[in-house]
Image (cartoon, rainbow, N blue to C red):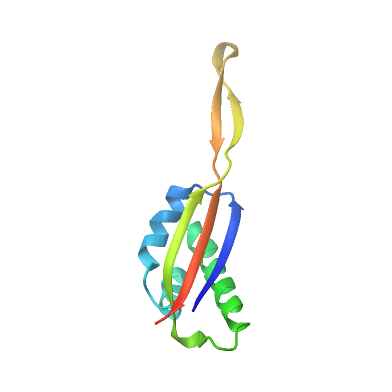
Length: 110
């Protein structure tokens, strides 16, 4: 049995989230949350929140044992990009791309 949780439009670059997601992929939920608690990256807190949400979703299903859940897949996709500009010399402007992410975590029983 699989359980899923998603966080959409998170204001952080997908490449930064993927770096942390690869570190916890395939681990048990308890081990993953312990690892994320000690990581200094901002994306670690975001991933921990999504994993906790998936565990809460699993808790609603009576046939799923919450203690035996492991991370089956973590998908970090790119969301819409906010386009801003910064004024430069001689009347020019450069673009600033503020990227967003869609984070999906799927948990399965071991």
